[in-house]
Amino acid sequence: MAAPKVAVVGAGVIGLSTALCIMETCPGCSVTVLSDQFSPNTASDVAAGILIPHTYPGTPIHTQKQWFKETFNYLFAISNSAEASEAGIHLVSGWQVFKNMPEEELPFWSDVVLGFRPMSEAELQKFPQHQFGQAFTTLKCDCPPYLLWLEKRLKATGVQMCTRKVADLWELHSEYNIVVNCVGIGAHQLVGDKKLFPVRGQVLKVHAPWVKNFIRDGDGLTYIYPGIHSVTLGGTREKDSWSLSPDPGATKHIFDRCCSLEPSLRGAQDIKVKVGLRPSRWGVRLQKEVLSQGAVKLLVVHNYGHGAGGFSMHRGTAKEAARLVGECIAALQGSSSRAKL
Ligand code: FAD
Image (cartoon, rainbow, N blue to C red):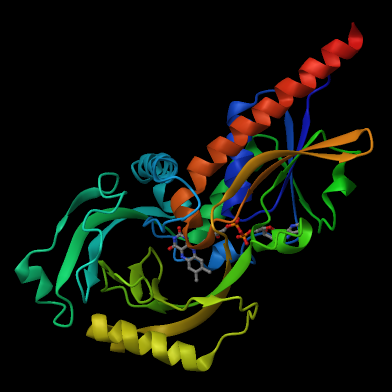
């Protein structure tokens, strides 16, 4: 058969990284990324981009650990290369602090990040309202540069990028052999997934170059993540809110909470407010589906629903989605050679 044509729908971190993995693992196929928005207008552009996983209750822990490890190792290699600053990837050390002892003293990802250990009494003196903490080094993506870096790599390997809103996956049937669905929260409408819901997140991006360590309250709501050009202060988590408008009350509340963890932030300047919708679900939807309209079939691979952890898991889930695309290509080649007999 001719080179299989693959459409990846969505140009957030999941769509772009999935397209790249398909190019790396399925030689000979042609890939097009179709999306109604590209960077800097995706939810992925708003993210803090820190590699600290959230747990998906519907996904086995060993699978989540594998996805995280693959993502960490991939970005660690970039952070250690000449590409690091263009890709916006760097190591960052800091603390996760708890007001009460956490249920799990050793999270599943503790041996993937670097140098994970309980904080010393001396370190805890910086956080008088907290009684326990964990110190470690992880990776951080500056999200818009990372998305542009992924786009650049895709274009260099011959991937086409098209601005297009897809109203129904079937509209791609005549042009493509396989469709990969990476539309994030857009899957609520595109494939009618009612298990998918938005968790609205508001963050501040501030200029505070003296802040070098990350600080995350163990409740996950308040965090300070220094990046290359700005520091991300968070945050909010509002389930089922679809609003993309900044909330001035939340801005003040985030700033005050972050200043109580790091008082020097009172001197921060150039405060910008960003809002994004986390595509949340019980578990990531990462599976093949064969859609049928009578005798006509459309091969689809879904990869969406990464909620609060899309950056932490993206490379691992992209590799798995590319493997599923490889299975679809093998099935197509099998049926085309049977048809010739
Ligand atoms: P998106 O980035 O939303 O991309 C979806 C793409 O699909 C877009 O290009 C969109 O235009 C396109 N699309 C949608 N519908 C259609 C359609 N019908 N036709 C064509 N195109 C369509 N994760 C971490 O791991 N670490 C963090 O520190 C972190 N911080 C976060 C902070 C905030 C405030 C928020 C909101 C999220 C954070 N996340 C974090 C989560 C992370 O941002 C998401 O999990 C991730 O961005 C999801 O990526 P995505 O590509 O699935 O979705």
